[in-house]
Length: 431
Image (cartoon, rainbow, N blue to C red; front, top):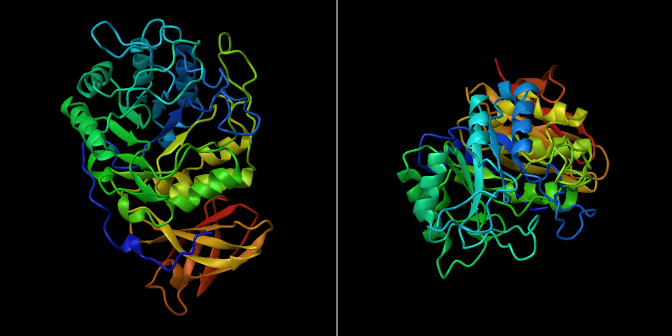
């Protein structure tokens, strides 16, 4: 685990991010990527042609589900297509085209339906001349084309379609261009459309693990600080958490550090043919309920966008308890500097991380204690660790946000028991 000294980056203003009218708060939504096939679990066949369904029926049914399953009132609003919707070839005049097998009537009816329910709609493209995904294409039709050389035309098309969110990946031949140049140009043309559109940068701008080039906050509303998410503990949630540490200074209103998808409840099992299946699909969880709570807890504290990529039409108990918890979501939905790790405390065979994000109204702090150990641990957290102003025998009121109940008051420190790979999230406040 990365050694972290006491920090107080949240006392300093966030890095300046440009405001194009969207994402004052971290975006919340759903993405196609893991709904049918897995997110890199061991049971996924190599180059599974059924990795993504990504068709009109699926998108409409997911939007209907999000409108009815309790997510909408809590702020879940984006319906995003990943690398799955683009046709194999551009039009005769070079226009980007929709895969006719998946969207025989084009995207217009789908986007209209999504908007009619009060949601926003997102698409994927790549900064290079091809996209990244080989799945689901007959031999001879891959690769799909990226946007390189067509930034002006593609962004104008996206805006004309009514798109609200663009994820731009980093695949294909860049023809010698560096990431800052390409991302800046794409952002320029996107904003020139006059339509406020969230721009997510996927890759290309890192200078090392967890080290993000500072230009990203000047051109985009979110940027991944991690690799592709895996639905497992060690190479998925735990490694992603470590890459979120010490990045709080880069994020803030209108520009957010992103930990990649939430895989809450487990990705799909790939158990039905995409030509006939409309879902919902079974989940094949790669993590325990505790581990899914931990991923969501840290994303909330770190102010990561919350984009779930599992089948929300099949809401299991862990999905309901996590994705529909208004008190954890409230931590995430603040227009303020992201939280960060304030220290490590020895716990079992590992150290527990103590994450902190101030409550935006100044009444106290949110605290997450993450247990990386293989057994349950009891951790005593000094109040001076979570707020440098809380010295001595300060007394605070304590609320457990996963249990959604007040648990009394603590003086000088707060002591919690945390199950293996779980996270206890508290709100500490003073009268």
